[in-house]
Amino acid sequence: MSGTDDRVAVETSDRWPDDADEDVGVVVNWFVAEGGHVEEGDSICEFQVEKVSVDVPAPVSGTLAEIVIGEDEEFERGDRLAWIRPV
Amino acid sequence: MAQQENDDTSEQQAGRSLTMSRAMVEAIAHEMREDDEVFYMGEDVADYGGIFDSTEGLLEEFGRDRIMDVPISETAYIGAAVGAAQAGMRPIAELMFVDFFGVGMDQIYNQLAKNTYMSGGSVNVPMVLTAAVGGTYNDAAQHSQTLYGTFAHLPGMKVVVPSTAYDAKGLMHNAIRDDDPVVYMFHKRLMGIGWLPAPDGPKTGVPEDDYTIPFGSADIKREGSDVTVVTLGLHVHRALEAAADLADDVDVEVVDLRTLVPLDTETIRDSVAKTGHLVVVDEDYRSYGVTGEIIASVAEAGLDDLDAVERVALPDVPIPYARPMEDEVVPGVDDIAAAVRAARGDE
Image 1 (cartoon, each protein chain N blue to C red):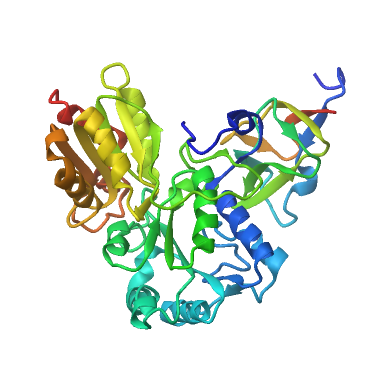
Image 2 (image 1 turned 90 degrees about the vertical axis):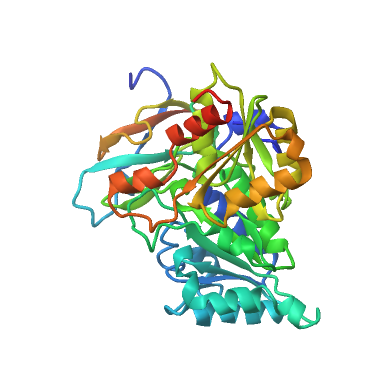
């Protein structure tokens, strides 16, 4: 689906804890539902790796178009968690 | 879930949601920005952010003079908070686990709770004592209690028990602004922590602006006409799940007390007058506690309204460590549903 529209991916590689050996995280909480508005920099979800919780800020302002990794789901470092449609 | 105070439901659905811990922290941060006299002290509340995330992020904004880690002496730091409150500050002191109240109890029930009275009103104690409560995660008998009834039994303290993020924020604003001591008991299972997943209910829409929820106002989380379930904390969500399971047969009303002191007996009595059937659900011990108090307060004023009464509570035993045994003693959704059926006479 990527490349077919102007949506911006939400991903975690630059938020990954430096000292984590593990490359698998789990999404703990979403703070915005699909269709909800997000402001650039606001925490939109929280994931956990090796018991460290990390907030993920919205990379742009817009509408949370799609949540790819839901709550309690695991993902690998670099995976896209969601898509935002900028406004 | 019904959000009684929230007139703007569209904002709740489309806007941001918060975990209960983040909602509490947002209220504390707001009050700290508004009033320099507000500060927070407790074990692991600064660098760690509270072991149940009750102060996550506050150290970065407010620094170590206002977010203070303390040595492991509940007597010392709760006493210091009482003194600071009497001197005009607005401390928030945290008991890491409510189970630890014993080592600081004189400061709580003889000083915090009584100094306004003992001084003839020459001082008051505008402080908040926060405490993590509750089990369901296999932490054994000394780290799993709720002890709601103990604090509510002793006069001089207001006792707050939130069940959702929305309620937690409004009640925290009200607690910090209150001129008298408030014990604010948050259930670990509701906070929204990664290693201790919450049920679906407590994460709610939360307005960014400040708002207060007055003490002594119970909230009808689900309206129903057949049976009244009165409960608080984690068990609000278990009662709502039981009510959903029973929806084809029984129309259950779920009353969330939100505060034990003051107690909103009017909302409870009105509901029982409508349904005639009362089930009280509590995670605290069965004897001499919340269940008996609620039932007595209804019976005193409206015995004729009562067709049936059931109570569901923790049996009077130390809470077991082993998961199947803890699950056995902590009231579950099935236990609540069975009590509702029993109250209806169709066990």
